View 1: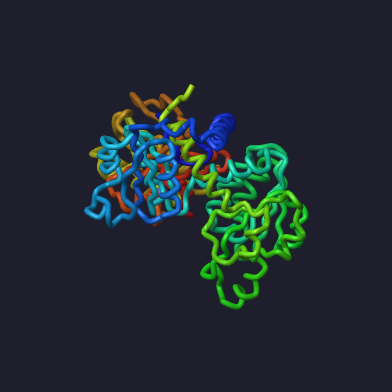
View 2 (view 1 turned 60 degrees about the vertical axis):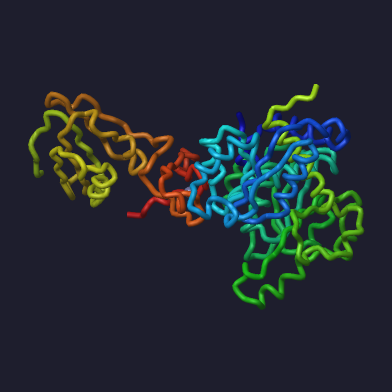
Length: 306
Length: 144
Ligand SMILES: [Zn+2]
């Protein structure tokens, strides 16, 4: 039995198979509509994350399965002081697979050690959020047709954004990837990512303070939110925030087949005017999130439809 | 040099960085043992200038010294049996250490679930980096 704790749990080959399955689901959803008939997914959300929870629930329902769970610690037995290990032992008796979101880092791993059903890490604190990374990879592969030979610009809060760190580690496994990190000085990508991941493998990258300077080079622009509380003072925030807002004027500088991604929710870092641009891929990304979670559930439950 | 008897069976931990012997004593939980322990501080050393030495008289399978590799792998472990040094042990970095160091990441699951073992895994032998098994936080060794 397998669990999913980190996006790197799957080898590149296993990932290919998973993404192939997700693409087949996209093309032939009817084939999978009863693949999980009679199976149950438990969504154990110790902190609210409606977006992720709904994506898992939609995925299981699309497969004909059932769902149950809780959406905050207050409505779970954790409120009574039950340990993660005890909760998962109980849930193992009710469900066939579970997705766990927990504010404490490593909680899903603790669960997986004693669980008799597959555990999917649906986000643990600032640590891992593997299904977001799988979503990003499926989106890129579906819309660009490949996961190698790409120049990807990552923009915004690159210091604290676990989404960005995971995506860099995941893409670093493919050939001819160039990373361009676009952020203010205060939110630059941590040096351990540059040294341990990129320089260690001889992967090229550059850093830039302005989107405009690098826009024409990009195949993908991955936007993230720049939060005011990350800045030391308001003046810096006000000075810099407009640099990191994507609008039609900046989009004019980009390639015609570039795509814009965002893990959502966005606040104002992408102007709504960009939504109509065919290169805006962030809402399609949500749809890919459902397909990849469907493929993941099938893979971990070892459901074969042949 | 000050000499504290000869051991019949036990360990002589040599080349301990001067001043670090009490820390080693605590890491090995020697206070919980009934055996005879001698701590020599600031002994003269050709190699190190000054060093600490710990002599422990006990059965040689009574103490697991693997953890020493995590604390300081320059320590020489002499294993004594029948009054003779039977082995000079080279210390290597253990792959995993359990309940020796605590994870200090306030967001780590070990901070709320008290019964969990604190486990650190050697993730980068070259840079001697250990990470928490649960949250992957780097273990920072105390600077001496
Ligand atoms: Zn930890």
